[in-house]
Amino acid sequence: MLSVEQWADIRRMKHVEGLSQREIHRRSGIHRDTIRRALASPNPPGYSPRPRRSSKLDPYRAEIERLLDDEPTLSGVRIREEIEKLGYEGSKTILDDHLREIRPRFLAPPRSFQRTVYRPGELVQFDLCEPQAEIPTGWDQTRRGWIVTACLPYSRAFAGALVFSKELPDLAWGMNRCLGRLGALPKKLVWDREGAIHAGGGRPTTDFAAFCGQLAVGWIILDAGDCQAKGALERSHRFLHGNFESGRRFANQLDFQAQLDHWSEKINRRTHPSTRAVVAERLVAERERMRPLPELPDSDRRWVTRVAPQPYLRFDRNDYSLDPRLVGRRVEVRASQSEITATALDTGEPACRHARVFAGGLAFTDPPISERSPSCATSAGPAAPSPRSRSVRSPATTP
Image (cartoon, rainbow, N blue to C red; front, side, top):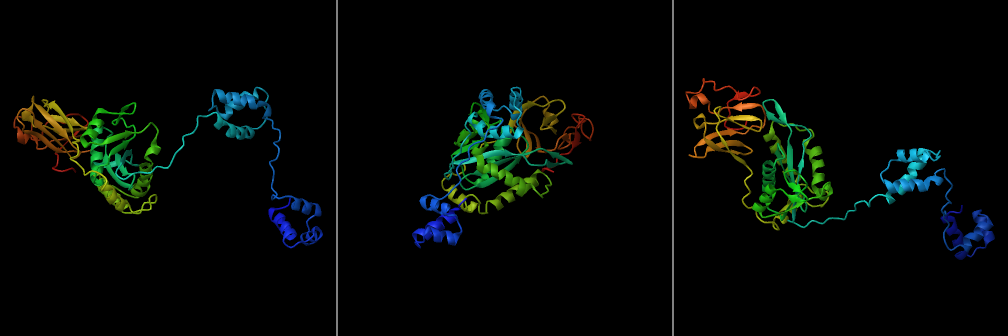
């Protein structure tokens, strides 16, 4: 077939150089009939669509469409089984190629996306990211944890806080810590449908709504499976696994958090590949459009209990001693991320103060019960509250 370049050259020799068809034939070696057709055609040569050849599948196309109309996701294996009953003897490849072309006509229209432009100070995206390995918590133990991650999508500033449960007090503490590191308050908090956040039907839980009300911010709870709506944060999770966790070792949860904070500061000083701007510089500009941080909501767990004859309080798999002089009286317990305290309701006197430990199966007695009440057992203290526990004197700070 005559190429486009040959066609153009023939027309040049005819119309520019004024050569005859005989001379064009002598110079190019192209047949005279081909030269005549090239000069008569104003359009370059090209391949026209070839007529479709008949296929062994042709008699069964209507049946295939009927099957897909009834069940669009019906597998190719099942469709082949059905049409083989009608006499189909063709190969699997012919059927698969045909299904690849026609199946989209029977499926629901796929979701489409548009480019999102974020305004400064409008949103902060929150999510949970599970570390690839369990976190050391002391006493030769490790524990599954989660990172409450936060990202300001305009500046791409990132912050994270390690927690050990998905309950709202822990998530609220993580949000407080992330907002504190970001340094200002946006207009809305974005979450997906975590159990402690979402009450069903797109509505927030009462506790999460109260948290947002105390901050005076709005919220957006995403549709189920709509992780693309937090695209800026989802990409940060992949970066966190590959760039932060890989090749690092952690002594305990405090060391993990310290290294995470240092890494967050480092990546917030880089030029972000999406915005082509330094994250910290855009964060400074974004803070000017956000409100200053108010007093952050209290995220500690609080409850009232009565001191049992065996004066221990069980919380988060551990037993913490209470003042045995308060047996039978009610105390208000307060559990934060760093300590466990209790106060007698009637007199206000302290009932205990322990550093919180995230390892499990331990009993903490501090100070020793024998020093506080001579009537109690021996100087070694009472037996551990359960067979799985070990009696440990609680230090003043987390071990």
